[in-house]
Image 1 (cartoon, rainbow, N blue to C red):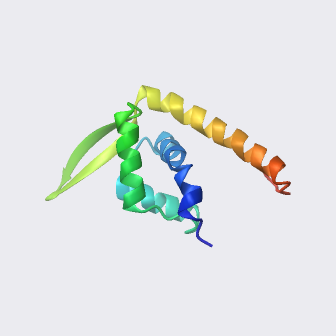
Image 2: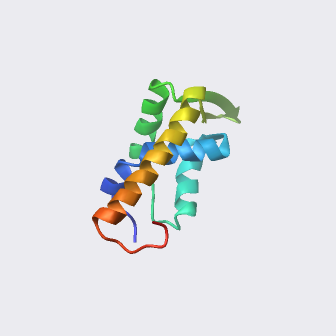
Length: 113
């Protein structure tokens, strides 16, 4: 089962921030492939969803970028800024609390609640 884009939309920035916290720096395609791999294909990020989120996080001062030339190709790496490191932790905590609230609200029996 692949999760709907509606579910992913509300968590995409949190996913990106957490991945960058764990991996220090990543480029766009690497982010999509890591998410796909870690979720066994249940979350598949499209470029149309990923890049606007990366640009918004960068505009908010949460990401820094570094460009590298690999042969004739340009690769843009994203890293967390100091503020991004703080925001990453806050977003993950907020999502965890939200998840616990939803489990309670929907009366879901889980192993993680």
